[in-house]
Length: 275
Picture 1 (cartoon, rainbow, N blue to C red):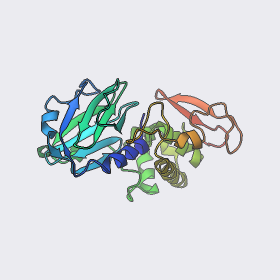
Picture 2 (picture 1 turned 120 degrees about the vertical axis):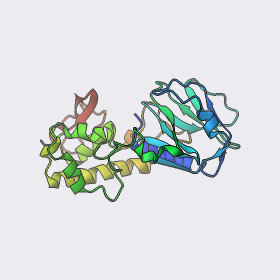
Picture 3 (picture 1 turned 120 degrees about the horizontal axis):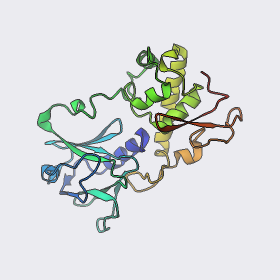
Picture 4 (picture 1 turned 180 degrees about the vertical axis):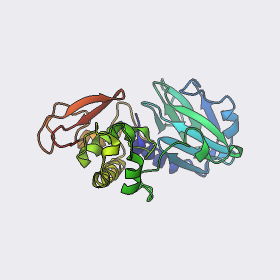
């Protein structure tokens, strides 16, 4: 699934082009996504100027005067710029057509979304998809103490708590495994058992892992591409544990182990990551 670095890389790509331009047409080729694309959405945004391209968690927010589009890339989707005369590919479900630019939402599994939050419906942060999200990891208010407070009393594994996004957003499956390895913490450890020093290590590891991924343009997922249509390269080069089960740990040479937590694969080093 595209995670925070992939979505932020996409946001940065479209933010260099969309704001200040008038969206001439929103063309919906397939409305049956995770939630149906609203029937009136093309009319809502026709000939409307894009004010800003923002992000909250894994959601792209395309702001107009009349409201905000909420775009999710789903399990393996991408939002890419395409030549004006290029025919839509299979699984190109929605396109944004400007005078001199065109973007296509490619979503083979149709797990993504293109929704609408009218300006009169209150702040976008109150939308049901966004209201329960935790703090952004690069927000100065995200501190080791805040992470420790969020984990207190929790019996669920620290890996699952990170994936839940209620404490901090954007630490999805890949980056959670990598962050926990960097911090030397067993992913099965109940969140409430993390001491303040371990939370400080985990906090630093989250920022380091996400920061490195952002610098590299996101991870290489099976069909993830950025807004320019180019694949990311981070985990091809730098993954320490993710999808490396059976290979030697880069620290201690213990074979990396794969387990399943909450129907998601977790990769860790039994030698380095302590409970």
